[in-house]
Amino acid sequence: MKYVLVTGGVVSGLGKGVTASSIGLLLKACGLRVTSIKIDPYLNTDAGTMSPFEHGEVFVLDDGGEVDLDLGNYERFLDIKLTRDNNITTGKIYQSVLDNERKGDYLGKTVQVVPHITDAIQKWIERVALIPVDGKEGPADVCVIELGGTIGDIESMPFIEALGQFSYHVGPGNFCLIHVSLVPVLNVVGEQKTKPTQHSVRGLRGLGLTPNILACRSTKALEDNVKAKLSQFCHVAAENILTLYDVPNIWHIPLLLRDQKAHEAILKELNLIGEPDLQEWTARTRVYDILHEPVRIAMVGKYTGLSDSYLSVLKALLHASVACRRKLVVEWVAAGDLEDVTAKEAPDVYKNAWDLLKGSDGVLVPGGFGDRGVQGKILAAKYARENKVPFLGVCLGMQIAVIEFARSVLGLHDANSTEFDPETSYPCVIFMPEGSKTHMGGTMRLGSRRTFFKVPNCKSAKLYNNDSFVDERHRHRYEVNPNMVQQFENAGLSFVGRDETGQRMEIIELPSHPYFVGAQFHPEFKSRPGKPSALFLGLIAAASGQLDAVLQNYGHASKLLPNGIGNGKPTVKTYQNGNAIKSSNGSLNGVYSNGNDNGNGAHH
Image (cartoon, rainbow, N blue to C red):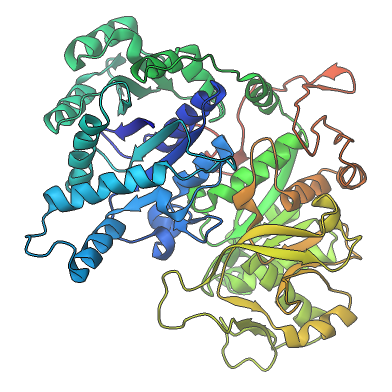
């Protein structure tokens, strides 16, 4: 097994995750099998209990692991399925060592950070690197390890010590260290400054790790004299110094690395050879760059200030938009701003929120917890339902749609979820029997579960290729009350997807509406750049007037979508109706949104 370690210096949030994913993609394009591990030095055992404001969204894996959003980047870029053990945290390591200590594994010994914690880290990495994640037999060829945080953090010290020992233990030719650092430009002089990177590398070397490759984040490509200076002071060959400058969208990063021959530098360190084939990726990136016809999606949520809180949802919308040849414009609508309270307190904010909602082509209510903004989400669902605007509700968003239907159509004005009103006389959403009300971490219905289609000809089933069932990832404590389902169905709300017992509701649809769908699961977690998630594809297709064409073509494996993307193996065509798609205004941005710069610069 060969290992590539990605560390970060100077500041956090440099885009180590995207860099690690891109390196993995590049190696995969060279014909190697790749797996990846993310190390988070915080003490939480997993990301499940952290607020999205703190650490971005919580990504859910097939095995129910609640992990860092970087694992989502790995899964999307490399098209793999990781396990909870691919996310190492300080909490998990200490927990396993303390469990062993209580069992008596270290009898008579003083248990210390070195060697006990550092040994546990190395064993964990070796064990997890062997788990196949690409659906094939046997271990991968290369494991990309990303160390979270910044060099010099107190909490990451045990990991750096362990990785220093590990590089010695696996030996030369099996370990390549890539250090991602910042080369800032001072506006006054306009000169690229190397000192922060020099200090960062010096700190790294002082801790026993020597970088083989430097990946420098900057606004523009590094000048030759700057590269020479870095090479001299950091003891890294000039051809091993890469520039990761700001790009229009992150799909460019693997291409940027390839153009700078990053694969050659990495493969040389690992005694491997190969040439990357990125034809399909390049074609898809080119399509993404020249999209200009907008599709506006109103995202009605609670964490609208921070795009990382809904990263997978944004990516799923993006994958679907590229497949439908539309430029995604996300209109962020804070759910609370749609409520009557805001109309009294801040009429301008209220009007602006409703204008955004009414000006959009589709409405998305993503998952979430807690009762803030619930009334606003209900109003958004009501607006979409009554005005025949394409709507997708995910997890809580699906429950919201059910509550709104109960109130408006069934006339049960007190209908609610017991999450928000435990005393409601019409509990249409209830706490699941197997949940825990005392322990928050890992006590939900988590991970991949099977949904069976009960209505064969419904839109969702067609979008899922007319399969009889589908496996999707869940993360919820509450569910639709099965005792009220008959009442809903009699009034025209169809529960088209259910679990194997038939008692747990998974997908809702309004047959009388162009596209009104809710899912109890989170389809965004399995969306991939070349394989958009079915329900998100449905939303974007409906919002851009292409749903009928998509529904006709799906379910017939041989046919292509109107944009030339097949539903099996995607092949990207940059020509539509025989004409090359021209870019309007020459802009290359990917995701446009009101005020939040999500498409570029932010997350790379």
